[in-house]
Image (tube, rainbow, N blue to C red; front, side, top):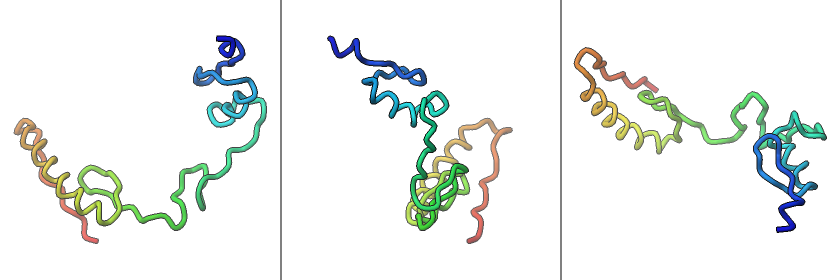
Length: 107
């Protein structure tokens, strides 16, 4: 119980930490409230704050029906299931709200 009295709460998320660990936690949880203004290290090759794709990573492809991204092999599997799901949802919709099946774009 005595350890709880020495714990300090993070102002950003409310989690409690030992005082020396709170400063480290705050760098990633709430950098604007951290006493030290160390920049966050970039993660991965070629990553940036704009969320750019890492260099050398797998090429992701987008499902033309739902917009989710997959690797090449996974996309082929996903599209079959996604098409069935789209057809079921479209059939369940009122007749005036049904849409034509989107055409798969050519590669």
